[in-house]
Image (cartoon, rainbow, N blue to C red; front, side, top):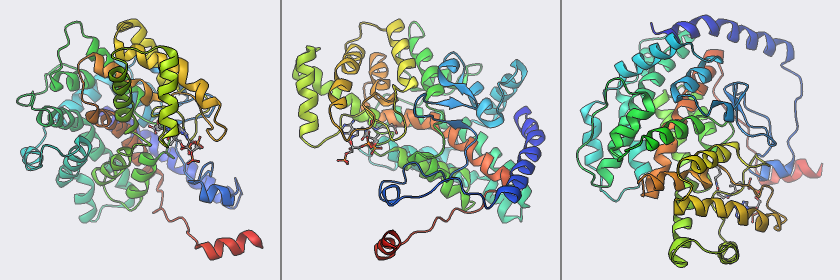
Length: 425
Ligand code: CMX
Protein backbone atom coordinates (compact mmCIF):
# COMPACT_ATOMS: atom_id res chain seq x y z
CA UNK A 1 0.00 0.00 0.00
CA UNK A 2 1.35 3.44 -0.89
CA UNK A 3 1.63 6.16 1.76
CA UNK A 4 -1.27 8.07 0.15
CA UNK A 5 -3.50 4.99 0.29
CA UNK A 6 -2.43 4.41 3.89
CA UNK A 7 -3.04 8.05 4.86
CA UNK A 8 -6.53 8.04 3.37
CA UNK A 9 -7.35 4.72 5.02
CA UNK A 10 -6.73 6.53 8.31
CA UNK A 11 -8.58 9.75 7.38
CA UNK A 12 -11.65 8.46 5.55
CA UNK A 13 -13.55 6.77 8.45
CA UNK A 14 -13.71 10.03 10.46
CA UNK A 15 -14.79 11.96 7.34
CA UNK A 16 -17.50 9.39 6.57
CA UNK A 17 -18.72 9.45 10.15
CA UNK A 18 -18.84 13.25 10.36
CA UNK A 19 -20.96 13.50 7.21
CA UNK A 20 -23.26 10.67 8.25
CA UNK A 21 -23.87 12.25 11.66
CA UNK A 22 -24.27 15.69 10.09
CA UNK A 23 -26.87 14.36 7.65
CA UNK A 24 -28.84 12.80 10.52
CA UNK A 25 -28.74 15.96 12.63
CA UNK A 26 -29.25 18.60 9.98
CA UNK A 27 -30.92 16.75 7.10
CA UNK A 28 -34.03 18.97 7.16
CA UNK A 29 -32.28 22.35 7.54
CA UNK A 30 -32.80 24.88 4.75
CA UNK A 31 -29.54 26.41 3.45
CA UNK A 32 -30.76 28.36 0.45
CA UNK A 33 -33.53 28.97 -2.01
CA UNK A 34 -33.99 28.67 -5.76
CA UNK A 35 -35.30 31.64 -7.69
CA UNK A 36 -36.78 31.48 -11.17
CA UNK A 37 -33.83 33.64 -12.27
CA UNK A 38 -31.33 31.09 -10.95
CA UNK A 39 -33.15 28.19 -12.60
CA UNK A 40 -33.17 30.00 -15.95
CA UNK A 41 -29.69 31.44 -15.40
CA UNK A 42 -27.52 28.34 -15.43
CA UNK A 43 -28.18 27.54 -11.73
CA UNK A 44 -25.92 30.41 -10.63
CA UNK A 45 -25.52 30.64 -6.89
CA UNK A 46 -27.58 27.56 -5.97
CA UNK A 47 -25.66 25.73 -3.25
CA UNK A 48 -26.22 22.10 -4.13
CA UNK A 49 -22.81 20.41 -4.24
CA UNK A 50 -20.47 19.37 -1.44
CA UNK A 51 -16.80 19.97 -2.29
CA UNK A 52 -14.02 19.87 0.26
CA UNK A 53 -11.03 19.96 -2.09
CA UNK A 54 -11.14 23.67 -2.94
CA UNK A 55 -13.31 26.77 -2.84
CA UNK A 56 -13.59 29.87 -5.02
CA UNK A 57 -14.80 32.93 -3.08
CA UNK A 58 -15.92 35.62 -5.54
CA UNK A 59 -13.67 38.21 -3.90
CA UNK A 60 -10.52 36.10 -3.52
CA UNK A 61 -10.33 33.28 -6.07
CA UNK A 62 -9.02 29.77 -5.68
CA UNK A 63 -8.25 28.42 -2.22
CA UNK A 64 -7.03 24.81 -2.11
CA UNK A 65 -7.85 23.11 1.18
CA UNK A 66 -7.59 26.43 3.00
CA UNK A 67 -4.42 27.61 1.20
CA UNK A 68 -4.68 30.50 -1.31
CA UNK A 69 -3.35 29.39 -4.68
CA UNK A 70 -0.70 32.15 -4.70
CA UNK A 71 0.89 30.46 -1.68
CA UNK A 72 1.25 27.23 -3.66
CA UNK A 73 3.04 28.79 -6.64
CA UNK A 74 6.40 27.24 -5.81
CA UNK A 75 5.06 23.75 -5.08
CA UNK A 76 5.12 20.71 -7.32
CA UNK A 77 1.81 19.43 -8.75
CA UNK A 78 2.34 16.18 -6.82
CA UNK A 79 2.43 18.19 -3.56
CA UNK A 80 -0.82 19.93 -4.49
CA UNK A 81 -2.23 16.55 -5.47
CA UNK A 82 -1.46 15.18 -2.00
CA UNK A 83 -2.99 18.32 -0.48
CA UNK A 84 -6.17 17.92 -2.55
CA UNK A 85 -6.59 14.27 -1.59
CA UNK A 86 -5.71 14.56 2.10
CA UNK A 87 -6.06 18.19 3.20
CA UNK A 88 -2.39 18.34 4.28
CA UNK A 89 0.94 19.11 2.62
CA UNK A 90 3.06 15.97 2.19
CA UNK A 91 6.27 15.37 4.08
CA UNK A 92 9.38 14.79 1.97
CA UNK A 93 8.96 11.02 2.44
CA UNK A 94 5.28 11.14 1.45
CA UNK A 95 6.08 13.17 -1.67
CA UNK A 96 8.80 10.72 -2.67
CA UNK A 97 6.48 7.77 -2.10
CA UNK A 98 3.75 9.36 -4.24
CA UNK A 99 6.22 10.07 -7.05
CA UNK A 100 7.49 6.49 -6.91
CA UNK A 101 3.94 5.13 -7.02
CA UNK A 102 3.08 7.30 -10.04
CA UNK A 103 6.27 6.17 -11.76
CA UNK A 104 5.34 2.51 -11.23
CA UNK A 105 1.87 3.05 -12.72
CA UNK A 106 2.72 5.18 -15.72
CA UNK A 107 3.28 2.61 -18.53
CA UNK A 108 0.66 3.42 -21.20
CA UNK A 109 -0.60 0.23 -22.91
CA UNK A 110 0.15 -0.03 -26.65
CA UNK A 111 -3.50 -0.34 -27.72
CA UNK A 112 -3.95 3.29 -26.65
CA UNK A 113 -1.49 4.44 -29.29
CA UNK A 114 -3.20 2.18 -31.84
CA UNK A 115 -6.48 4.00 -31.11
CA UNK A 116 -4.76 7.38 -31.55
CA UNK A 117 -3.15 6.46 -34.84
CA UNK A 118 -6.48 5.26 -36.26
CA UNK A 119 -7.85 8.82 -36.04
CA UNK A 120 -7.60 11.48 -38.74
CA UNK A 121 -4.83 13.98 -38.01
CA UNK A 122 -7.18 16.93 -38.22
CA UNK A 123 -9.22 15.72 -35.22
CA UNK A 124 -9.25 18.26 -32.40
CA UNK A 125 -6.51 17.40 -29.87
CA UNK A 126 -9.08 17.48 -27.04
CA UNK A 127 -11.23 14.87 -28.83
CA UNK A 128 -8.18 12.62 -29.29
CA UNK A 129 -7.03 13.14 -25.69
CA UNK A 130 -10.45 12.38 -24.20
CA UNK A 131 -10.83 9.33 -26.38
CA UNK A 132 -7.49 7.94 -25.20
CA UNK A 133 -8.51 8.44 -21.57
CA UNK A 134 -11.62 6.41 -22.35
CA UNK A 135 -9.39 3.76 -23.98
CA UNK A 136 -7.52 3.46 -20.65
CA UNK A 137 -10.83 2.47 -19.05
CA UNK A 138 -10.12 -1.11 -20.13
CA UNK A 139 -7.79 -1.36 -17.11
CA UNK A 140 -10.27 0.03 -14.57
CA UNK A 141 -9.89 -1.59 -11.16
CA UNK A 142 -13.12 0.05 -10.01
CA UNK A 143 -15.19 -1.60 -12.76
CA UNK A 144 -13.52 -4.98 -12.30
CA UNK A 145 -14.00 -4.96 -8.54
CA UNK A 146 -17.60 -3.75 -8.87
CA UNK A 147 -18.32 -6.69 -11.17
CA UNK A 148 -16.76 -9.00 -8.56
CA UNK A 149 -19.20 -7.72 -5.92
CA UNK A 150 -17.13 -5.00 -4.21
CA UNK A 151 -18.52 -3.81 -0.86
CA UNK A 152 -19.72 -0.16 -0.85
CA UNK A 153 -17.12 0.71 1.81
CA UNK A 154 -14.39 -0.16 -0.66
CA UNK A 155 -15.59 2.12 -3.49
CA UNK A 156 -13.28 4.97 -2.59
CA UNK A 157 -10.25 2.66 -2.50
CA UNK A 158 -10.92 1.34 -6.00
CA UNK A 159 -11.62 4.89 -7.22
CA UNK A 160 -8.28 5.97 -5.72
CA UNK A 161 -6.50 3.10 -7.42
CA UNK A 162 -7.90 4.11 -10.82
CA UNK A 163 -7.22 7.79 -10.10
CA UNK A 164 -3.55 7.18 -9.36
CA UNK A 165 -3.10 5.16 -12.55
CA UNK A 166 -4.96 7.74 -14.61
CA UNK A 167 -2.92 10.63 -13.19
CA UNK A 168 0.30 8.66 -13.69
CA UNK A 169 -0.47 7.99 -17.36
CA UNK A 170 -2.07 11.26 -18.40
CA UNK A 171 1.13 13.25 -19.13
CA UNK A 172 2.42 10.59 -21.50
CA UNK A 173 -0.93 10.42 -23.27
CA UNK A 174 -1.08 14.21 -23.64
CA UNK A 175 2.53 14.41 -24.85
CA UNK A 176 1.87 11.55 -27.30
CA UNK A 177 -1.11 13.45 -28.72
CA UNK A 178 1.05 16.57 -29.11
CA UNK A 179 3.85 14.86 -31.01
CA UNK A 180 1.51 12.83 -33.23
CA UNK A 181 -0.94 15.65 -33.97
CA UNK A 182 1.77 18.11 -35.03
CA UNK A 183 4.15 15.64 -36.75
CA UNK A 184 6.95 16.29 -34.28
CA UNK A 185 8.56 12.87 -34.56
CA UNK A 186 8.33 9.68 -32.51
CA UNK A 187 7.00 9.68 -28.97
CA UNK A 188 9.58 10.44 -26.26
CA UNK A 189 9.73 7.99 -23.36
CA UNK A 190 9.44 9.29 -19.78
CA UNK A 191 12.73 9.79 -17.97
CA UNK A 192 13.42 8.20 -14.59
CA UNK A 193 13.95 10.66 -11.75
CA UNK A 194 12.03 13.61 -13.25
CA UNK A 195 9.03 14.97 -11.41
CA UNK A 196 5.57 14.59 -12.98
CA UNK A 197 5.39 18.00 -14.71
CA UNK A 198 9.05 17.98 -15.76
CA UNK A 199 8.46 14.62 -17.38
CA UNK A 200 5.46 15.97 -19.25
CA UNK A 201 7.64 18.85 -20.53
CA UNK A 202 10.36 16.36 -21.46
CA UNK A 203 7.97 14.05 -23.35
CA UNK A 204 6.52 16.96 -25.35
CA UNK A 205 10.04 17.48 -26.69
CA UNK A 206 9.97 21.28 -26.43
CA UNK A 207 13.45 22.79 -26.54
CA UNK A 208 14.20 24.01 -23.02
CA UNK A 209 17.74 25.35 -22.76
CA UNK A 210 17.42 27.27 -19.49
CA UNK A 211 14.69 25.12 -17.90
CA UNK A 212 12.10 27.93 -18.25
CA UNK A 213 9.54 25.69 -19.97
CA UNK A 214 9.83 23.08 -17.21
CA UNK A 215 9.33 25.79 -14.58
CA UNK A 216 6.28 27.02 -16.48
CA UNK A 217 4.86 23.51 -16.73
CA UNK A 218 5.20 22.97 -12.97
CA UNK A 219 3.37 26.23 -12.32
CA UNK A 220 0.78 25.57 -15.04
CA UNK A 221 0.03 22.13 -13.60
CA UNK A 222 -0.31 23.57 -10.06
CA UNK A 223 -2.61 26.45 -11.04
CA UNK A 224 -5.12 24.39 -13.04
CA UNK A 225 -5.61 21.41 -10.69
CA UNK A 226 -8.97 22.27 -9.14
CA UNK A 227 -11.59 25.05 -9.03
CA UNK A 228 -14.28 23.69 -6.68
CA UNK A 229 -17.11 21.56 -7.97
CA UNK A 230 -19.62 23.78 -9.73
CA UNK A 231 -17.80 24.51 -13.00
CA UNK A 232 -18.88 22.56 -16.08
CA UNK A 233 -16.03 20.03 -16.12
CA UNK A 234 -16.00 19.30 -12.38
CA UNK A 235 -19.73 18.95 -11.97
CA UNK A 236 -20.03 16.82 -15.11
CA UNK A 237 -17.32 14.53 -13.77
CA UNK A 238 -18.96 14.49 -10.35
CA UNK A 239 -22.39 13.64 -11.80
CA UNK A 240 -21.08 10.85 -14.05
CA UNK A 241 -19.07 9.32 -11.18
CA UNK A 242 -22.17 9.38 -8.95
CA UNK A 243 -23.65 6.67 -11.21
CA UNK A 244 -20.58 4.62 -10.18
CA UNK A 245 -19.09 5.02 -13.63
CA UNK A 246 -15.38 4.59 -12.93
CA UNK A 247 -12.89 7.51 -12.90
CA UNK A 248 -11.86 7.00 -16.54
CA UNK A 249 -15.46 7.49 -17.72
CA UNK A 250 -16.02 10.37 -15.34
CA UNK A 251 -12.80 12.29 -16.07
CA UNK A 252 -13.20 11.85 -19.82
CA UNK A 253 -16.78 13.17 -19.53
CA UNK A 254 -15.61 16.13 -17.45
CA UNK A 255 -12.90 16.94 -19.96
CA UNK A 256 -15.48 16.97 -22.76
CA UNK A 257 -17.04 19.85 -20.85
CA UNK A 258 -13.65 21.51 -20.48
CA UNK A 259 -13.46 21.52 -24.29
CA UNK A 260 -16.18 24.21 -24.53
CA UNK A 261 -15.11 27.75 -25.57
CA UNK A 262 -16.84 29.34 -22.57
CA UNK A 263 -14.81 27.07 -20.25
CA UNK A 264 -11.35 25.51 -20.77
CA UNK A 265 -11.19 26.05 -24.51
CA UNK A 266 -11.06 29.80 -23.81
CA UNK A 267 -7.25 29.50 -23.57
CA UNK A 268 -7.18 28.42 -27.24
CA UNK A 269 -9.55 31.25 -28.19
CA UNK A 270 -7.42 33.81 -26.34
CA UNK A 271 -4.26 32.91 -28.18
CA UNK A 272 -6.05 33.01 -31.53
CA UNK A 273 -7.38 36.46 -30.58
CA UNK A 274 -3.94 37.73 -29.52
CA UNK A 275 -2.33 36.43 -32.72
CA UNK A 276 -5.08 38.12 -34.77
CA UNK A 277 -4.19 41.41 -33.06
CA UNK A 278 -0.48 40.99 -33.80
CA UNK A 279 -1.22 40.13 -37.41
CA UNK A 280 -3.63 43.00 -37.93
CA UNK A 281 -1.23 45.61 -36.53
CA UNK A 282 1.94 43.88 -37.76
CA UNK A 283 3.20 43.78 -34.16
CA UNK A 284 2.10 45.13 -30.81
CA UNK A 285 -0.63 47.81 -31.23
CA UNK A 286 -1.10 51.07 -29.35
CA UNK A 287 -3.64 51.08 -26.50
CA UNK A 288 -6.04 53.02 -28.75
CA UNK A 289 -5.77 50.44 -31.54
CA UNK A 290 -6.31 47.62 -29.07
CA UNK A 291 -9.34 49.39 -27.64
CA UNK A 292 -10.89 49.61 -31.12
CA UNK A 293 -10.09 45.95 -31.86
CA UNK A 294 -11.70 44.76 -28.60
CA UNK A 295 -14.81 46.85 -29.20
CA UNK A 296 -15.08 45.37 -32.72
CA UNK A 297 -15.06 41.89 -31.17
CA UNK A 298 -17.85 42.85 -28.77
CA UNK A 299 -19.89 44.64 -31.44
CA UNK A 300 -19.79 41.56 -33.65
CA UNK A 301 -21.59 39.60 -30.92
CA UNK A 302 -18.56 37.67 -29.69
CA UNK A 303 -16.99 37.51 -26.23
CA UNK A 304 -13.52 38.79 -25.44
CA UNK A 305 -12.03 35.42 -24.49
CA UNK A 306 -10.22 35.14 -21.17
CA UNK A 307 -12.27 37.86 -19.51
CA UNK A 308 -15.19 37.43 -17.14
CA UNK A 309 -16.15 34.58 -14.85
CA UNK A 310 -19.29 32.91 -13.58
CA UNK A 311 -18.14 33.20 -9.95
CA UNK A 312 -15.12 35.51 -9.64
CA UNK A 313 -15.51 39.25 -9.23
CA UNK A 314 -11.81 40.11 -8.93
CA UNK A 315 -8.67 39.47 -11.00
CA UNK A 316 -8.19 35.69 -11.00
CA UNK A 317 -5.18 34.98 -8.73
CA UNK A 318 -4.07 32.31 -11.22
CA UNK A 319 -3.80 35.14 -13.79
CA UNK A 320 -1.67 37.08 -11.30
CA UNK A 321 0.58 34.06 -10.75
CA UNK A 322 1.19 33.74 -14.51
CA UNK A 323 1.68 37.50 -14.84
CA UNK A 324 4.39 37.39 -12.16
CA UNK A 325 6.02 34.42 -13.85
CA UNK A 326 6.05 36.18 -17.24
CA UNK A 327 7.41 39.45 -15.81
CA UNK A 328 10.28 37.48 -14.32
CA UNK A 329 10.99 34.97 -17.08
CA UNK A 330 10.02 36.56 -20.41
CA UNK A 331 9.06 40.24 -19.94
CA UNK A 332 9.80 41.15 -23.57
CA UNK A 333 8.05 38.28 -25.36
CA UNK A 334 5.63 40.00 -27.80
CA UNK A 335 2.60 37.80 -27.07
CA UNK A 336 3.12 38.05 -23.31
CA UNK A 337 3.49 41.84 -23.60
CA UNK A 338 0.24 41.94 -25.56
CA UNK A 339 -1.56 39.85 -22.90
CA UNK A 340 -0.33 42.39 -20.31
CA UNK A 341 -1.54 45.25 -22.49
CA UNK A 342 -4.97 43.64 -22.90
CA UNK A 343 -5.17 43.53 -19.09
CA UNK A 344 -4.58 47.31 -19.10
CA UNK A 345 -7.16 48.07 -21.81
CA UNK A 346 -10.00 45.51 -21.81
CA UNK A 347 -11.32 45.68 -18.20
CA UNK A 348 -12.00 49.41 -18.71
CA UNK A 349 -14.16 48.56 -21.74
CA UNK A 350 -15.98 45.68 -20.03
CA UNK A 351 -16.67 47.82 -16.94
CA UNK A 352 -18.74 50.06 -19.21
CA UNK A 353 -21.06 47.20 -20.24
CA UNK A 354 -23.67 46.89 -17.55
CA UNK A 355 -24.64 43.25 -18.08
CA UNK A 356 -21.06 41.97 -17.61
CA UNK A 357 -20.63 41.06 -13.95
CA UNK A 358 -16.87 40.44 -13.99
CA UNK A 359 -14.66 42.62 -16.20
CA UNK A 360 -11.44 41.00 -14.96
CA UNK A 361 -9.12 38.45 -16.57
CA UNK A 362 -9.39 34.76 -15.75
CA UNK A 363 -6.53 32.26 -15.97
CA UNK A 364 -7.11 31.58 -19.68
CA UNK A 365 -6.32 35.15 -20.71
CA UNK A 366 -2.59 34.73 -20.16
CA UNK A 367 -1.57 31.06 -19.97
CA UNK A 368 -1.24 30.65 -23.77
CA UNK A 369 0.98 33.71 -24.15
CA UNK A 370 3.58 31.97 -21.97
CA UNK A 371 3.25 28.62 -23.73
CA UNK A 372 3.66 30.42 -27.05
CA UNK A 373 6.88 32.06 -25.84
CA UNK A 374 8.41 28.66 -25.10
CA UNK A 375 7.48 27.28 -28.51
CA UNK A 376 4.14 25.60 -27.91
CA UNK A 377 2.59 27.59 -30.72
CA UNK A 378 -0.46 25.40 -31.43
CA UNK A 379 -3.42 26.95 -29.56
CA UNK A 380 -5.70 24.00 -30.33
CA UNK A 381 -3.50 21.94 -28.01
CA UNK A 382 -3.74 24.26 -24.98
CA UNK A 383 -6.90 22.82 -23.44
CA UNK A 384 -5.24 19.39 -23.35
CA UNK A 385 -2.62 20.85 -21.00
CA UNK A 386 -5.38 22.35 -18.84
CA UNK A 387 -7.00 18.89 -18.80
CA UNK A 388 -3.82 17.10 -17.70
CA UNK A 389 -3.77 19.22 -14.58
CA UNK A 390 -7.54 19.34 -13.98
CA UNK A 391 -7.70 15.52 -13.98
CA UNK A 392 -5.97 15.69 -10.57
CA UNK A 393 -8.72 17.81 -9.04
CA UNK A 394 -11.49 15.80 -10.65
CA UNK A 395 -10.02 12.55 -9.32
CA UNK A 396 -9.63 13.98 -5.81
CA UNK A 397 -13.30 15.00 -5.89
CA UNK A 398 -14.40 11.55 -7.09
CA UNK A 399 -12.49 9.84 -4.28
CA UNK A 400 -13.95 12.19 -1.64
CA UNK A 401 -17.49 11.59 -2.94
CA UNK A 402 -17.11 7.82 -2.92
CA UNK A 403 -15.54 8.08 0.54
CA UNK A 404 -18.57 9.76 2.11
CA UNK A 405 -20.94 7.63 0.09
CA UNK A 406 -22.61 10.30 -2.02
CA UNK A 407 -25.64 8.77 -3.75
CA UNK A 408 -26.41 9.00 -7.45
CA UNK A 409 -27.25 12.60 -8.40
CA UNK A 410 -30.79 13.30 -9.48
CA UNK A 411 -31.93 16.93 -9.32
CA UNK A 412 -35.56 17.49 -10.27
CA UNK A 413 -36.49 19.13 -13.55
CA UNK A 414 -39.86 20.74 -14.18
CA UNK A 415 -41.55 21.86 -17.38
CA UNK A 416 -42.34 25.46 -18.24
CA UNK A 417 -46.06 25.11 -17.44
CA UNK A 418 -45.22 23.80 -13.96
CA UNK A 419 -42.63 26.54 -13.47
CA UNK A 420 -45.15 29.22 -14.46
CA UNK A 421 -47.71 27.80 -12.05
CA UNK A 422 -45.20 27.72 -9.20
CA UNK A 423 -44.00 31.25 -9.88
CA UNK A 424 -47.50 32.70 -10.13
CA UNK A 425 -48.85 30.90 -7.07
N1 CMX B 1 -16.97 39.37 -23.41
C1 CMX B 1 -18.20 39.71 -23.86
N2 CMX B 1 -19.33 39.49 -23.20
C2 CMX B 1 -19.21 38.93 -21.98
C3 CMX B 1 -17.98 38.58 -21.41
C4 CMX B 1 -16.82 38.81 -22.20
N3 CMX B 1 -15.62 38.45 -21.79
N4 CMX B 1 -18.19 38.06 -20.19
C5 CMX B 1 -19.53 38.07 -20.01
N5 CMX B 1 -20.15 38.59 -21.08
C6 CMX B 1 -21.58 38.70 -21.33
C7 CMX B 1 -22.20 37.32 -21.34
O1 CMX B 1 -22.03 36.67 -22.60
C8 CMX B 1 -23.65 37.63 -21.03
O2 CMX B 1 -24.25 38.12 -22.18
P1 CMX B 1 -25.78 37.76 -22.57
O3 CMX B 1 -26.59 38.13 -21.35
O4 CMX B 1 -26.05 38.58 -23.77
O5 CMX B 1 -25.79 36.28 -22.81
C9 CMX B 1 -23.51 38.78 -20.03
O6 CMX B 1 -22.22 39.37 -20.26
C10 CMX B 1 -23.61 38.39 -18.58
O7 CMX B 1 -22.63 37.43 -18.31
P2 CMX B 1 -22.04 37.25 -16.83
O8 CMX B 1 -23.18 37.01 -15.90
O9 CMX B 1 -21.11 38.37 -16.53
O10 CMX B 1 -21.15 35.94 -17.02
P3 CMX B 1 -21.64 34.42 -17.10
O11 CMX B 1 -21.58 33.84 -15.73
O12 CMX B 1 -22.92 34.27 -17.84
O13 CMX B 1 -20.50 33.79 -18.01
C11 CMX B 1 -18.28 33.39 -18.76
C12 CMX B 1 -19.20 33.60 -17.54
C13 CMX B 1 -16.92 32.99 -18.27
C14 CMX B 1 -18.87 32.23 -19.60
C15 CMX B 1 -18.23 34.71 -19.57
O14 CMX B 1 -17.65 35.72 -18.79
C16 CMX B 1 -17.47 34.56 -20.87
O15 CMX B 1 -18.05 34.10 -21.86
N6 CMX B 1 -16.13 34.91 -20.88
C17 CMX B 1 -15.30 34.71 -22.05
C18 CMX B 1 -14.94 33.22 -22.17
C19 CMX B 1 -13.96 32.79 -21.10
O16 CMX B 1 -12.97 33.45 -20.85
N7 CMX B 1 -14.24 31.64 -20.49
C20 CMX B 1 -13.30 31.04 -19.51
C21 CMX B 1 -13.81 31.08 -18.08
C22 CMX B 1 -12.86 30.40 -17.15
C23 CMX B 1 -12.94 28.90 -17.30
O17 CMX B 1 -13.98 28.32 -17.02
O18 CMX B 1 -11.95 28.28 -17.74
